[in-house]
Amino acid sequence: MTDKTCPGDPELRAKIEAGDGFIAALDQSGGSTPGALKGYGIPEDRWSSEEEMFGLIHDMRSRIITAPSFGGGKIIGAILFERTMDGEVGGDPAPEALKERGVVPFLKVDKGLEEERDGVQLMKPIPDLDALLDRAVAKGMFGTKMRSVIKLANPKGIADVVAQQFDIARQILAKGLIPIVEPEVSINSPEREAADKLLLTEILKQLDALDDGQCVMLKLTIPSEPNLFAPLVNHPKVLKVVALSGGFSREQACAELARNSGMIASFSRALLADLKDDMSDEEFDSALSKAVDEIYRASIT
Image (cartoon, rainbow, N blue to C red; front, side, top):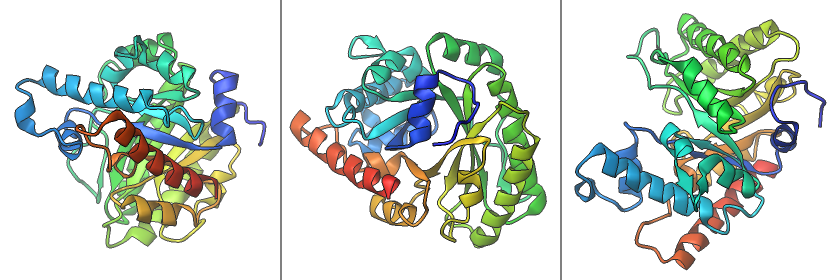
């Protein structure tokens, strides 16, 4: 382990830097919640308002977090939606419930994507970000996450995405939180390999421009060329590089991840795909345990 001078709680930081496990992405927000619930076996006719919908997704997340296999030491972090951060899990505030299980809490802060331009989708403006970050600090969150999407190997578009991510990352760092920068390259891009290489170049530029004592995490699509992101994994201003599943099945995502040394998983669909609302608690934890074990093995390979 390197001695990286990043902000944040030293104990939580050491857990992420050691990387002996993976990060669960439990941050589906308004636009993606119906799909997540449908995958879980809850159709849209089960709710009649947004509040009921968010109540159902919170119940799903609470069930996941309180399952025995979630707190078994193989999951080192979890990314939460704002409403989950504000809620309770097992009678405790959600961030504290995670910490009690040895899981470092992160908060999704982006508000979705702009329309595609120059082959990319920038993030929409994030109103009242400072106030949200202050709440996250007060609730004991360790870091944040924000997502953009890259669809084509357009140099201007990719430079714009990375610049926007790092501009907001500096605002987050100023609050003492660690930002997870997520410029996702679509696995369906016809120019994926070229986009990966352009992305690497732009991220390295932005990392070199960070002040001393600042560092970020990176959440990236698993590169088409294995270990392409090794310069990021080993960079002194990167606490950890984590991989998104990006639409791959769990089997595909784990196989691709295992080919990239030093990257760990931060999966959502690939983690949750086999979980269903009508399962018994034993069936539920058995399915979750199987997914956790597969993703853990790929992350520590």
